[in-house]
Length: 356
Image 1 (cartoon, rainbow, N blue to C red):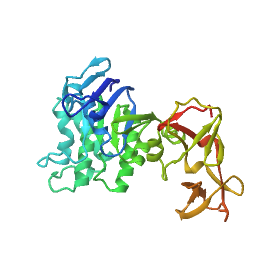
Image 2: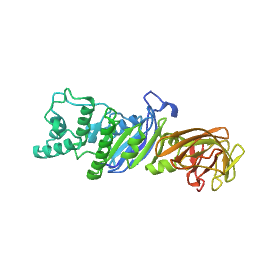
Image 3: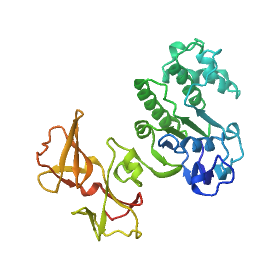
């Protein structure tokens, strides 16, 4: 286990970068707590795998340093950093049995065979491969091979950190849920520092204590699942987290009032914003209320998805979504109000403190 410091790191895949746009990974200055469970979440191409590979030692950053427990490891290999890494697609030894694949990292470090056997059997049970322990890896399906890869990443308990790069891509949905649950249990039991890369918000929010949301090569928010949901620091976080995503509406400001067309919406205290900034109001569908009083809206579509319905409406020429409990009435001539707890103001895509 290790405390990991990323000291002003940036990375460009091209020579002589001249501006932020030339960096695949923009500046990151952050501390990853010893024993923390983190998820790097974002769309393809946002920089999350680049960041993971820099932490692991597979890639040296163009600028900055990486420190493990205060020791500069920027120039050290993955092996020298004592990192375990599980990749998106299976990496196994086809000529070995499932058991021997899991035992290999331990035997390679001279662990006594009695300890090897105990640890391997524990991991075999965890990944549900105990009945295949003596089978050769050759001929197994892709999802079974990936379970071996996961097991081999988890079998050592002396690593600085365990890194996962979208490891459940080839795993069936039910097994994904089981393995995520088991990873959480393993983290609680052994306290490994774990960093998990994914583009799937369900994987990130159910695995991690802290989620690191990335967009266009930069970290836009680090927080708990509740913090990401209730107070998105960037409009992208609002779009990306939640289904449906956050409603984002263009507004102007008049003191402590946001104006959407001719409609006035209270936002708490008058915020400080830069002149000319693009101002937007962000409200998650869960904080939109349909009633007979409020802002006039025209309902355009209703989706029934079981326990609740998603109501789509036109509000002052802008599409808005509301999550409505299954048994609640949807007025024919609906009006909209916003729960004050769910109102966020953004200037140039970044959240502004309104004191709410």
